[in-house]
Image (cartoon, rainbow, N blue to C red; front, side):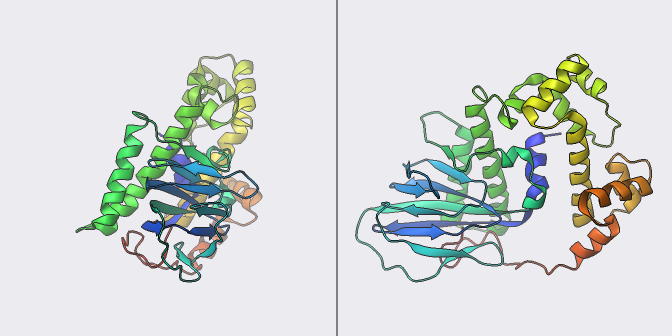
Length: 324
């Protein structure tokens, strides 16, 4: 099983949104905080990303910037340009609060997108990312990421039959490639966190084992054997790098898998219990209530009663305003 894919699946909700936007200077868009995560890719021209309390990040053609924590930020041709607020709609898309008169300066073309996330069960792989993940354009670097950008940009600019299915799939692919690129660029220097964990063959083997079969009655000794380390060395290294002991992470992941199954399927509770590594439905229900404060059945009913999000297509290539 793929730990990176699992981490994203654990948090993702709803459908992603995207847009292709052309802006002539002067312009500045201020995005409020949200539960999701977003990205900007500069296809032509240049601009500045201005994070809260941080220095402006210059962006050039081909640069990709990912904001994993939903912090408010501004994107502008110049930090001194007055900004227009952009607000999030219930379906996760974004729109400007007022019309922006076209400028007569240099034009910047942005490819932007957003992902809706459930931060109540945030995977440490994503929570450990910096406020701004900047993947600068460098000749020959991350060709798969560049290819995904080209495909998505082309689909938004020239939509064809099946675009409503293609665009969300490309957005999911782009998110994976952004994270791959950042992990690749930082794994050699990371001391702790998931960049370090996935770059460590021993810890990566143990993590893949847990994600591949969370129902297995794993012990620290068995995971250490998978990692090719002594029990004490493995436990110490895992805790220092990942941030929690091996069995604590195992329990956390089992509960995450169970919660996702309850929210997205009608699998019987006994089957959910088995997937969570519990031999009895009673033991699973007790552990689930201890973790989440309600029974598995109660959680499933509460989730089913929530209002459905706006079903407007996430792949609409011509959304109103700035749909990020």
